[in-house]
Amino acid sequence: MDEVHARGRKVKSSLRNISVTVIELPRGKFGWQLLEKQENHGWQALAEGQTAFARYADAMAAGLLQLQSLVADLSAGPRRPAATSAERQESAATGDDETATGEDAQQPSGKLFGFGPLR
Image (cartoon, rainbow, N blue to C red; front, side, top):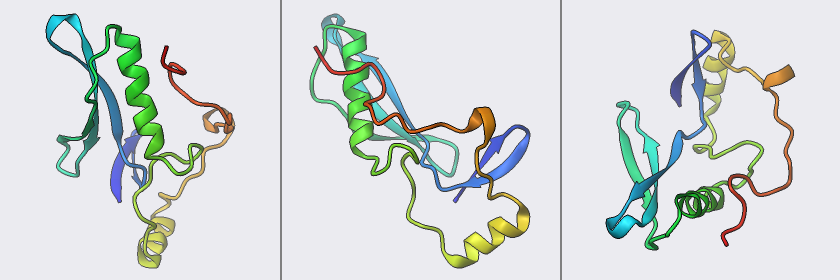
């Protein structure tokens, strides 16, 4: 589990830190990459699109769709394999096992996220 700094506290999280980025290709075209934050705090390429898009928004949408395909449960996000019972006990003992409430809680929408379908 990674330690995430949230609201000035260290919180253990099984959420994978994956970002979608758009890159500029030759001739004014755009492509997408998925990058994942590593434990050493660097970023590593996870996937890259093979299509050149004329519009930035289309490249971003394609990257978001690829990210979505990696996520089994969109309400929980991309997760690492389940923690061992020892890790769960440690998390509970240190108070790092928080559940979002109030304005931080997100209700699943049941829809695609991002920029929507490609045109």
